[in-house]
Length: 108
Image (cartoon, rainbow, N blue to C red; front, side):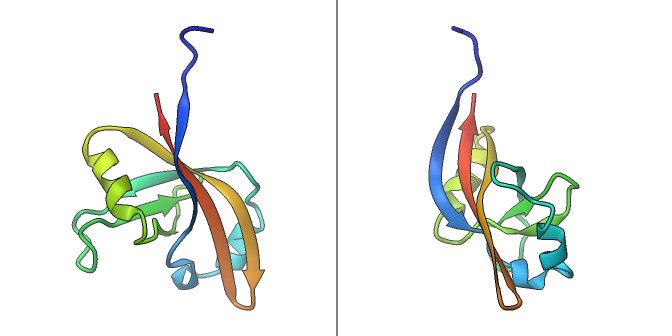
């Protein structure tokens, strides 16, 4: 198919930052599965990080942020008008911490 939309993985694996601050995150994450799409939304007005990018689930809940190891890159793509999204690659409960891992893809 010549006109099929393409996705390019631009970040292979990154842990979603800030999940510890989401009330009932463990219960929410029980409904997540590998491959679930996550919206990435710029938060340029964030007072703590000018490159902040929110990670939102299918119910449009903010579940964290793109980690600082790659958020500038992702923010620049979004600021440039590119379509990017996260896709859940792994989840794990470690004590009270819900660790969510995602890849970031650039869509056609």
